[in-house]
Image (cartoon, rainbow, N blue to C red; front, side, top):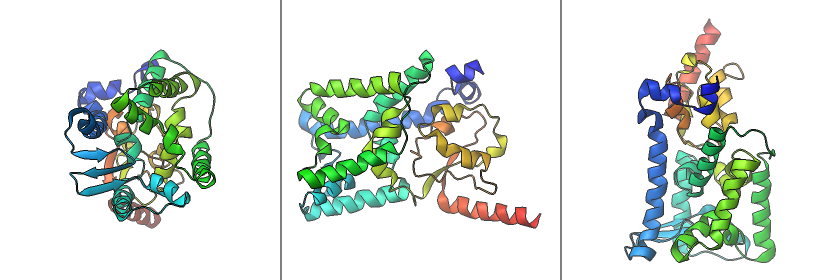
Length: 299
């Protein structure tokens, strides 16, 4: 048990090999760094594949992409966006409706690298306890940022958004951004496990609202093989989403993880030596669940 607590995924490494036991983690890091590099190539190297930032950008001079959270704040200030911004919002919104809103948190957001590092170090150092933040806090903060836009007439959140500050820092010099990065890192390391992404970030709260109907889901398809090692719960940034699908709670619950708080990070797939989890489509699992339920009724 001690080995499981200090080294989640060690059994998966022994069973599947290091590469397979970290496949989705490596793909996520590649995605985050690649997206960040695309934005930095223009201002730092003069190669303008993407112009703008994660709030609003233009890809190859033709494809607009706009953060719907930023556009909503803009609307609340009384400003009407340009047609290109509206088109960009539609594209981004449809993407996250299909593939999961919090995909942004685990596959795009560069701050996730910082919080994941803090969580890893916290685990390695065996740090326990700390302050407790309710996960609903992020929704209260989301509401506060929207209210602030109405009251001040500005997109106030963008002034303190860690993602925007890091991007500006990489282009113009980190300065204050280093302090923001350090505060978030120390918060997650010493104060509370995964405090920022799990309980405080209003961006994650907003994107979770887009994930209720997404087609791409993690599924505990092979849950009968679970040996209760708990590695998936240790590495999951939102461990509360696993139990209903894995343990069939309440009875008859399908293997699909339906919570919109799931970030589709794939770490539960990585660290499971028994290959309990996999990415799957909502429609496939819905049909599987219906067939399973019918069989249970018949028996």
